[in-house]
Image: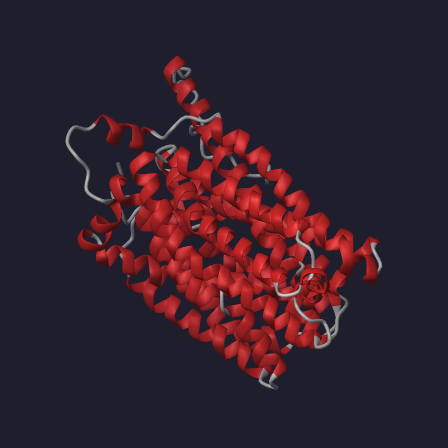
Length: 446
């Protein structure tokens, strides 16, 4: 994580003659720091597990599917990537409701256990040449479990971080949700860079990629420990103390807050499609379409991710100062204008790729620093986890999960020039939604 921004648990600097904070203030700040570590570090580990799949998809495709047609094997592997996204709305509904009924802490503990366990299963699963059709079946089942887990993770960790934030710093707190996602993706990309640079093709294809999945699964134990040793948020504790039965969170969200749920979907469309193209799939896309060596493409991705992580908390602080609408609109408007030139300058040159990735990364900060806080600000605490998790997971399943498959299909079918139009259309939707949504920077939340 970046050291350049003040963690969301740290209170604002006191004026010169302001009294020193008392024991209660210090304990509140310490509690927020513990919440930050549990939410962000645990989320980092979870997203290492998720991102390893897309990082190594072009490497292990031939292990789980017949390898006589490499392009078909890659498309099959990416189809499984998309199938995993189909479980995200289910996970969002089930685990979101679980988090609203039983607590954010318990839900986060459950999600990381499932994600890490599935990564270990993929790491040890025999290939198609050994167990035949059983290999892709195991891959699909493991990816379904990971999709279910990911569907609940965003909502629970976002609600947990926002509810644990200091006053006036909700966007900064929420930005660490995406810092952790970026850090997880960065670790996965770094593992990809190291393994592709140190192993020959045969070693990488046969057993090298399994190291990344095994490391990702074992790291889950770290996140699990952190999450079992943190306190529940005060927002949920107040719900627990409230008298009377609570409505079913899923039904209450759909019946009482349909406009807020639709707004979450609209907020997510441009962000998730562009994020997955830029952060998760760009190395494989460039490798397949331009012939650039995968290790070079992964290195450019790793460097741009490092910049992304550093910038995210600053994006959160900017949002807390000038508002959500301005920073989100700048993100979508920038991609709407630059989609065509960014895609059309891509070639097999490393520096060109790095420049393209960095331009997109700077624009993406406007979305990623804001998405968690905007979604949390739409709902009351009794439906907050479900309200974030389910609509977000639906949008991600439709637009994020299919993006790598569709762009690969376009490129392999001779329609590479249409990829920028696909991205620009999503950015246009973003501009419309972000300019029309209400500003929530100063909204009071329970």
